[in-house]
Length: 218
Image (cartoon, rainbow, N blue to C red):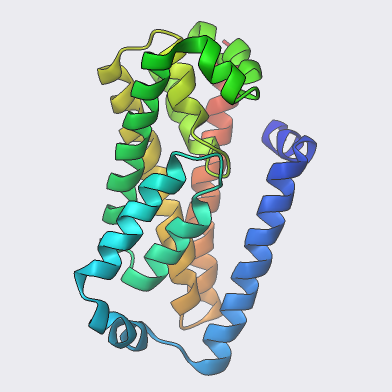
């Protein structure tokens, strides 16, 4: 309930979620209407070879380092390259980008980051004092539609790089899995399969929400 209220109060997140859902439903209709399969996509991408995957990898890194939402690109990569290669590509790209963001914030300091990204101040006040591994993991998971706020909080709060990277790996795993399952829903052969593919990310989100409330109640 607290997560729902937080989302409803953030118009930007609400609009982004609405747009993503609308695009997903449109893609689902197109995939069903024209019978688009994994084999057809593989044939379409074959002439690009590994260059297409490399381009997706580099674009994901660059996008993750900007205030632009990077979730749409992650979905696109997994749709095009499948849940395995696509997930590994996105996971590594996000991890590299978040490490770079941490080092930038650590090097340039609080004054520059707050001037460049004013919205960081609120998050820093709420989470910066108690930046534990658990809080960083949950914050990483719930920042899937926004810029990489977690890296800035960790760097400006004095969290060690090793601790930060550990929390990033743990936080990105369920996030990437959720992206992969939802993207593969476009290829579901039945409504039941689509429901199962959506229910697992929903359970992950619910579990993370409960964990977040427990952590905030300490």
